[in-house]
Figure 1 (cartoon, rainbow, N blue to C red):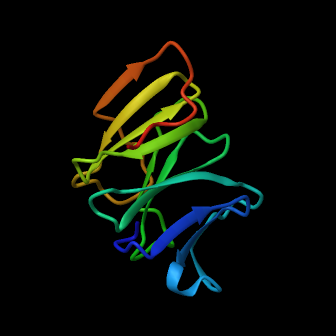
Figure 2: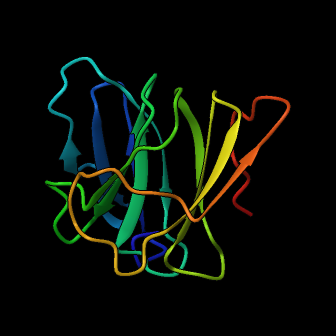
Length: 141
C-alpha cells in the first residue's frame, strides 16, 4: 500500500489515519485526523491501482471519506448515499476510479470517482444493489 511494500496505514479509535514504514517502525505519520472528537475511524482501504488514494469511514456514519495521501488534510470526497452506517469498502482491482461500499441499509453501492469534483457535496453512485442480509465487510481479494 502507499506505493511501497514497506508502507502501511491504520485507522484508530482516536479518529486518525496513520502511515507507517516498516524500515522505521518507531515513528508514524498522522496523515488525517477527524474534526469530530471521539469519532473512531473503523476501516480503510487502499486504492489497488492508484496508491495515492484511500477510503475510510467513521463508526455509525453513512458516508465514506476519500483521501489523497499526497494532501490528506482535507478529504477529496465525501461519498454520502447510504441511509445507514457504512460497514465496509473495497476498491476495484481493475479500475483506479471504482469503489464499492456496503452499509446497514442493505445497499451495495458502486462509485466511479473518475473526474470527480473535489469537495464534500452529495455524489451519486453509478450502481446500487439491494441485498437481503447485512454485509459486515466487503471482500477485496
